[in-house]
Length: 368
Image (cartoon, rainbow, N blue to C red; front, side, top):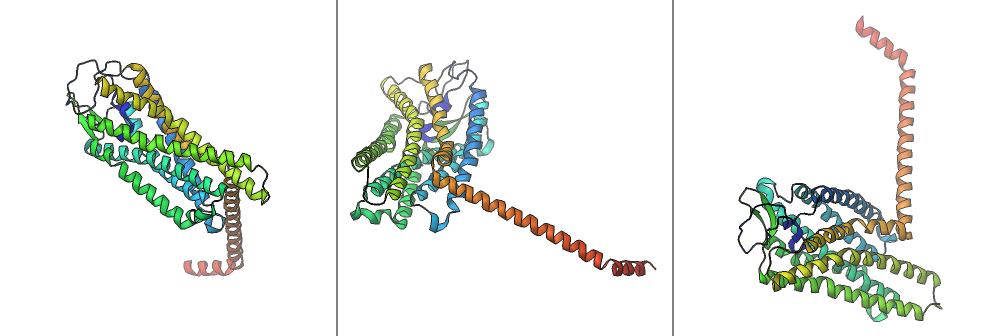
């Protein structure tokens, strides 16, 4: 997981282990949480199935709208769902690893899977926070209605922004491809670990600052300004209906952002504590509370991938209407198909009866 999964390094072993110091492999006999080989795989599979179905549903509903019914914010919604959908496909690998006390036993493909899955998780984290930041700025421009910047809310500009977010996220995830490796222990057990050097630790701190702290500050600034603006212009002389739609969209985006921050903030806190601990004390074995915090906060962060579909379904009236319309359309199509099949069956039966005698004669002549 690039810089996002150090807790996978902590495994249970009663013997003293010697490894290359450039890899972060702690020597802790009590490093595994009790029962983690059971509850971690279970959590990962739950997140996998709910995230897969939920995000696929979001893509189907929002993607089926067409240009006429589409909102500009839906472009960000679809991209968020795609990022989460790709991410959840990596969870079965980590579930299998967790069920085997974090051993990474995937044969010859092990190293490639280690790098790829870690890279996908890193890209998912970066793209999520960047898309949410873009959504906050978009909501700010939509509500404050800055005429001088209205071209920034064009469909073309938003698509270019999404492409730029993907490019930057893919670029920032490259360290996961470079520094993640599969290390084989003395007893032939393999582990997916991250190379740990002072340079990488400092880089991880800077990445946390650039890809979490700064974006969250921008989001808070946007929404703080929006709240003051809405309170000042509570009753608008313009279009009350349009104002209600803006407020509703603002509320939905705010819920998505709060869910992301609540999901990822604990992990970033424990991750920062771990990095500082290693830089200051340079100890390979952290306290149990620290390791447990990484495990549980990482699980909470992963749950974010299946939260957004629930927010859309329960809070976004526009999304619910589209989902209902799509369901009714599918139901009507199914009924028409069923009616057509029934009609075809009746017609075929009638044809057989009409030509039954002739068919009988023909069949009789064949046997005479």
